[in-house]
Image (cartoon, rainbow, N blue to C red):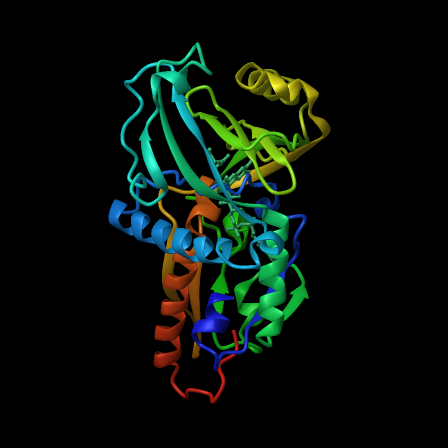
Length: 322
Ligand SMILES: Cc1cc2nc3c(=O)[nH]c(=O)nc-3n(C[C@H](O)[C@H](O)[C@H](O)COP(=O)(O)OP(=O)(O)OC[C@H]3O[C@@H](n4cnc5c(N)ncnc54)[C@H](O)[C@@H]3O)c2cc1C
Ligand SMILES: O=C(O)CCC(=O)C(=O)O
């Protein structure tokens, strides 16, 4: 969508073996709370987050907020000791970031310290559908197909943009990307409107427009997409301990996704060469636990790299095909 809007002379085709509601992005809680990529400079992460936050905040302030699934949500990040509660790099981008008051902390008797703020949340399937509609509205095409070799695209497209997430491990053999399995529950509890996040206890409660996401697990190198009932019970019990009214939650659904983890997001141009043939590729994958938090910022950078590829195509076509 970002490429089709910033470089209108490109024709864009999305090729993917799975679409919403069957992607990792559909499982995500969709909270704009970044995780740090140790291999990406902080100033860069801050810029991607700010661009994403500003973009979604504008949607939230429009009549499209509901259909796009974008809501503002206020709440608390809580800690049992002060020692892990550093000021995050994104504290001046979310709204009203501050230490919790003693009165607020009374809601969580086991916790000593906390941070209160307001951020944005995506209802991911609604948001993904909106993106697909916008792409098609801009003349883009969507094809369902598994790609096993990027060279298979060379005859039909001038530039390939690789956004295959964890699929990049197999597709391009990037062994630096690995799965971090996450199991969450999506429940109906419409009376909840504050989020609660205990990062050390791996628990979160994230109310959105259509459901509340309860989490979480982080299992490095696990490719298992089957839900584990014991984990579901553990998540539910931990979340009820934080928010006892959840005992009355209904319509509990379990979802599992594989976070595409990497030391750094790979946002880079690469020119593949096979004899006389060249294939410009722009990689944009490895967003780990922060794909929603960073998506628009990283998309803007990918679109800029596509612009550079177009400029270096030997015989620029009147309309480049991606
Ligand atoms: C439980 C959980 C909770 C999360 N919560 C949050 C959150 O609150 N906030 C946040 O910012 N992030 C969150 N994340 C992280 C976020 O979900 C990911 O960073 C994001 O979804 C990655 O998006 P992606 O488009 O790179 O990958 P995907 O959503 O996996 O999309 C990749 C696409 O590429 C396709 N594909 C892959 N390989 C091929 C191939 N060979 N041929 C054709 N198509 C292919 C796939 O079918 C898929 O459609 C969460 C993740 C999990 C698992
Ligand atoms: O970490 C969070 O609190 C947001 C959810 C998330 O990013 C995840 O589960 O990967």
